[in-house]
Length: 470
Image (cartoon, rainbow, N blue to C red):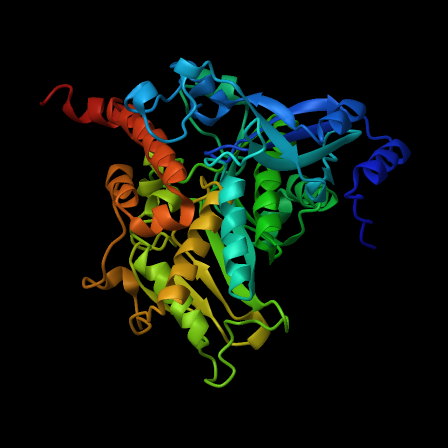
């Protein structure tokens, strides 16, 4: 039996919390990296903040991933400092407050924390205007753009992740030697999956209680690697669910002395972790799947082809949004299950875009480039931006590729480094028009900082290879 929805009006929400024994609300929003930044508030204090918003220093939009590393907390500064012409949190302005305006439609129990509800929202400036860097706001604008054409976007997310023994402190003490909960892969194995059903079953059930419906799960091709597929739904809810999914899995694992990791490529000889995005547009008036080519057999509709053409025409320009860290590009290898070329086909997992169109209601496109380290708001926004560009410009894709795309020398490759991908994103007129100048430039600056940090590192491999014989 399905759980009744949490009321989305403040008065009914307050009464529901009182009747259900809810005493704490985790309120916040996703940052550029897809980290859920938030505060815990007593219910009464949260209710008082629904109108004005929950205050946060805008410094949270220039934090990097480095808060618990030997490098300490790092803040990214805009080039030119105070002279930078676009919106960017900066020390010259003292990092003032911005406000998360809670969306009660996102309220869900967090059953791994007793008496606790989580609520997501959008970042706003003190006067109420949207923060132009906010990934949820950027996605919301693209959803409205799709609706202006008469379509509702539907999204299904497939995240893969590893589970390791120990916490971060233990990992540091071990010299960063990762120990997965299984020493070998059990790819789709029922027996292998059963070995960890106590943990994975608990994750499934607690995510379901948090409103994230997992429709299937299985062990993947790396040791201790899993895939839990989220049932498709409206694009904004899919992204909200993605934030809760990643955060929830990490917290549930941590409570058992384990670490869940969505790193794209945790070790050279292990499978990478992907975030395949299934997407389709549905007619607002009729509720019909607009990608279904009912008059042309199993093929996509004309609209679906144009959407595909847009995805392909922006794939290289948007790669930095699909592969947001230097580590992401180590996943791009032949026969890695990652889309590594500007290509598409029907039911072909070697191409960048896989079309599934055998049944009218299931017609969709699967984007196979993104990694598990992606921000769900940004990766869905990038897909919609490319697809809508294709529809608006009526871009016809190249013929569907037949055969092994990994072995095809003539297909254009995706960028092979974050630096190359960022150069393409920065110069993309489509990205700036669809996502906004402020967002694109901030994203480029943030990720260039990360790429610069990566270039400065000296790896164990380099020492072993060169220390004596160079």
